[in-house]
Length: 270
Image 1 (tube, rainbow, N blue to C red):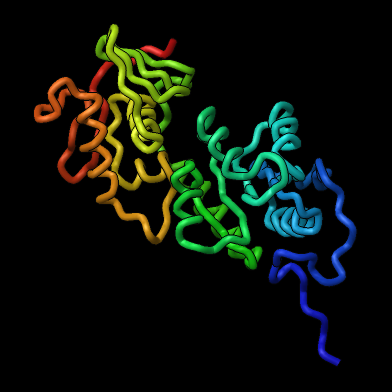
Image 2: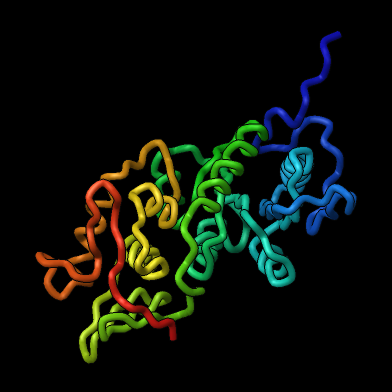
């Protein structure tokens, strides 16, 4: 008789065969003696996927907390610090895209989206919301672990922020409201697109630091095989039209040949 397939090798949309009953949230950590440093949150409304992914991540030395929805994740995030979130898109109530957008608006916590949708448009929408990577079901948990490691390596390689972000930042006599994506100068104001706002935020948070195109991609929307570094050049050009007093002679967003871009202004978080 052929051996039964290992349910850990292919997590699908439905319940894996012979999967044990799963608890919702939180799943207790492993023994204290082997408790790892990196803490991953897994958010999915399917209890079997929660248990199987958590079990596999623990095999690779991660500390894991699971949540069966956005509300459960918010509660867990209020009591613990996470290094990365694996987030399902299709959930009842608040979906994963909405939660991802909220996470990205308030922190730089890395996010990997997990979903049954595999169309290119869905993957692009997720990345534009600020996700760092995207894994489609069915998936091999070993691939998920590899993507987690890659995202964490990129996050740890980024230069430190000049200052912890708040709701508003002032520079060059103007105020940038991160929540409203609004750049105001006295009685005049301009609203930035989500992509422009993420790019400006990345630049002001690392003011004075030269950021390569790869680093800007990592900070603003993650890396994907269908994203290319020249997309950053186009976004920089659009952003300069709204930020620079003379876009033809930029004084704030500087270009460094072969290096990338930097933000040349004193910033004040308010």
